[in-house]
Amino acid sequence: MDKDYWNEQFRSRQNKLFSPEEYLVKNIECFRPGSVLDVACGDGRNAIFLSKHGYDVTGIDFANEGLRRLRDFASTQGLRLNTHEINADDTERITTLGQFDNAIFVHFKPSIKTFLAVSNLVRSNGIILMTSFNYRHLLKSPQFPSQLCYGEAEFLNRSSLLDLVEYVSYSDERGFLDGYIFRKQSAP
Image (cartoon, rainbow, N blue to C red; front, side, top):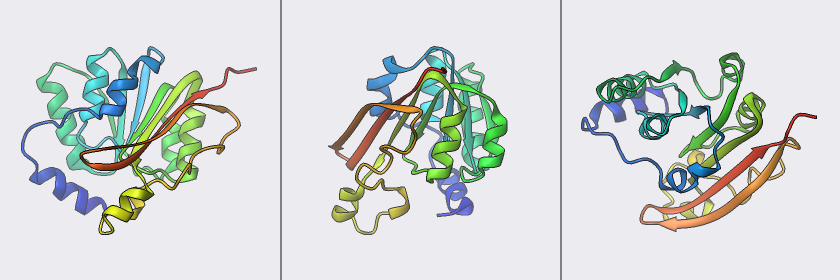
């Protein structure tokens, strides 16, 4: 699935924003006040939700059509968000975005390099929330893109700077998913 694929997906959607990710909605109270980096934000269902809850949101995605829709949805609702057309694997560009109080990866599986780069952008005591389909989803739906599915406990113990708040496997009407919440340790 490449940029052209996702641009076409966003072009063909109705002019209606999907609901925010339930795992994010349930865990928003864990977030630090302030800013959020939404990695692979798509057309902004989670970015809009976070902005409505008072967060200063920066969304990055490689699909310019998704970002266009995000800006349109935000403008219609009187919200201001920052957007950048950046491939999530371009860690050099990601590191130029500055620091954030929180970061999210929703329905996107970052490379370990991207995960660590984003972790370095999160301020002390900030939260990183991640959720996506997992390896059990592939067993149920083998045609599903494996590059979107987390391996079992795949992101545990990847950084000594992150404390695990929660790691959970769950299922809903869409399939099998994993959720992670990390808190960045305080600076010494």
